[in-house]
Length: 157
Image 1 (cartoon, helix red, strand yellow):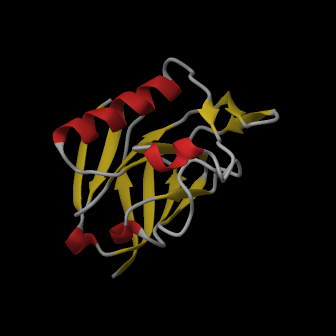
Image 2 (cartoon, rainbow, N blue to C red):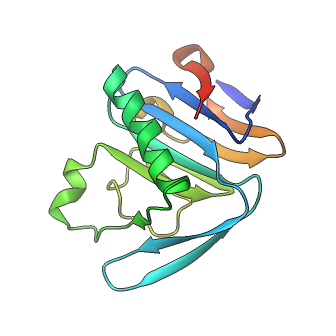
């Protein structure tokens, strides 16, 4: 288990963490304003230069990796709002990719996908359970991860 690893990441790049059952994609959010849509309200979210969008996908094949890239593109470049479902919503079980935004995200396999408006926790596969992902100047900091079980890739967004 690695306590802390920092990986350089530019604004035009995406960092992929691929495990046995799931994959995570990470991009810089940049300083801007975004919207979170819940069942009963709209929340404005303000990000700083090194904050992140983190997408967690339940699968590891090429289609899932491309889906993660597309989802992050939709959120950051097309400005699609983040959607938060009620905990008992039937679509929660059908979500294949979920996204969070902010300075730090903790991955948990104990939560219902797509139901956390706080944006500091994101559903993910068991190999990522407890991992913390934080935006730092010029990169991404990973905590509580076993890098021997993860394939790390960086590509252009």
